[in-house]
Image 1: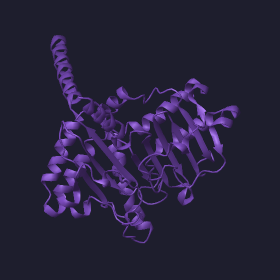
Image 2 (image 1 turned 45 degrees about the vertical axis):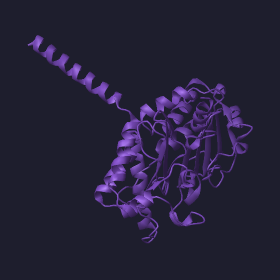
Image 3 (image 1 turned 180 degrees about the vertical axis):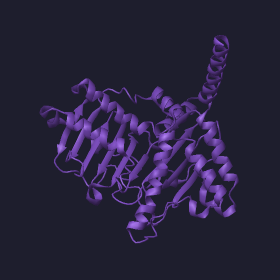
Image 4 (image 1 turned 120 degrees about the vertical axis):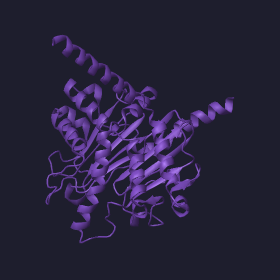
Length: 352
């Protein structure tokens, strides 16, 4: 019996090892290309014209997190909305979204979208609040070895993936918002979509000593929104010189909280993607990481924070709707929409 049990255990261990190896071997770029091509093949001519753009189209870097009608000057998003897809096409669009996100990130994105129904009901059936008003745009020709990009976007969600020569990836700008930040009533009462983004930062700022707070807290009032807004490129001047408290001035527990905050933003994406980015850029262990806070430190008070490294910027603001409306974004100072990757490869190709 013991030998039989041991053999069964060994078989399970081998099977698990094979399954794990197979999962780890999956190439996210191949899966994204497959998902994008399946989606495109499902579209008719009119839908294709709305969803598929040339690689060099100016719309590639035009991103927004506000509802459609507030987008200037057109008052609308480009791309193909879920509202104009049939059930099969919506499923394929969802497959494209899930090809880039981790399980947690995908669940969070779906929850962000679901909040539109709550706003629809709270605002007397406001037509701009619609869980199906999310758009898919593909730029260039999806390929496992090519250069192309795609966007999945609507109110409070903007996923921007750029692939360069099938090898290098950019995921910024990456925006997740939540309104309400915490659902106050109804069947989803208590739901806090971006809980870690808020709670870890508050825990960190409240753990600071009086001397540390003098460096970390920049203002008693929070700004009305994130400083970067919907800008195509981050204005470095807004964040230079760097302000806030350096991670070198934090104790071990505080450093751990800061690291968890960065991971909360980054690990919305598949681990394979994050690992690849980490190899190219200091993501989790960057020197000169700074944390800055503005506003109140108690729940229900308007607040803002940012985590800034020489490469990346993570911004969070919760001030609107009585401090129950969150905007949270991950930006790359020089690499949004893969700008640094494209520049590097253009330079390399030119030398050849």
